[in-house]
Structures are given as C-alpha cells and as structure tokens.
Length: 123
Image 1 (cartoon, helix red, strand yellow):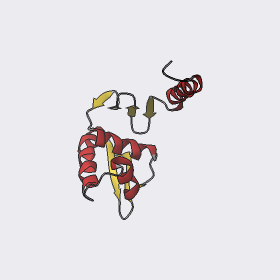
Image 2 (cartoon, one colour):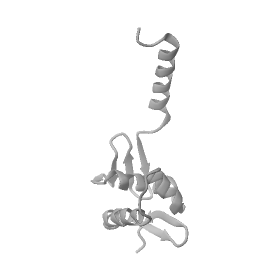
Image 3 (cartoon, helix red, strand yellow):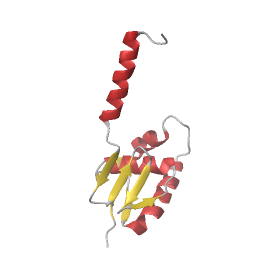
C-alpha cells in the first residue's frame, strides 16, 4: 500500500476541504464583472477579456477589496510574491489592465500615496 490509512484519510480530507472552501465563479454586479477562478478567466457583461496571469492577479486583488483602496505594497507582494521585480513593474501592469477595462466601463483609480482601487468609470 503506497499510503498509510491515516495519511490517505488526511489527504482525502484536505482535497474535500479545498473543493468546497472557495467559489469557482464570483460576480461583481456593480462592475458587471465575473471571475472564473478555475479557468483564470474574467468576463465583463458576458464578454471574455483576455488577461495575462499577472493582470488577472492584480484585478482579483483589487476587486476583492470591494471598492476600497489597496495599499501598493500589499498589492505588489500579493501579485509578485517574493520575486525581485522593479518598483515600476506594478505600475506597468496596472496600466495595461486600465487599457483593457476602461473601454468596458471599469477604471482603476490611483489613490495618491496609498495604492489603487477599482471602480466603475465616471462620466
């Protein structure tokens, strides 16, 4: 037997916990945004928006804050982890997310001295 009975039971329990712990799809009605976490896809009003994995992570963290500003340092650590990247790298990626979502009615605001927040475009 490749696994002992207690180890096998623990692995099955962990697998069941992961499958039920987080939703695979999440909707943000105020933005018309839908996340498919299983397929790493984002839809705006039913239309797929192609994103890189870094752009997906940025948007995921900003929408999870639900309209509140996300500290720049927190966003950088959650998106890039422990990887050594330039301080401007986050700005470049945020700019590309802005370009993709601005025409769809979603804006990423810079909060001076703090970080970023996602919101519907103002007319």
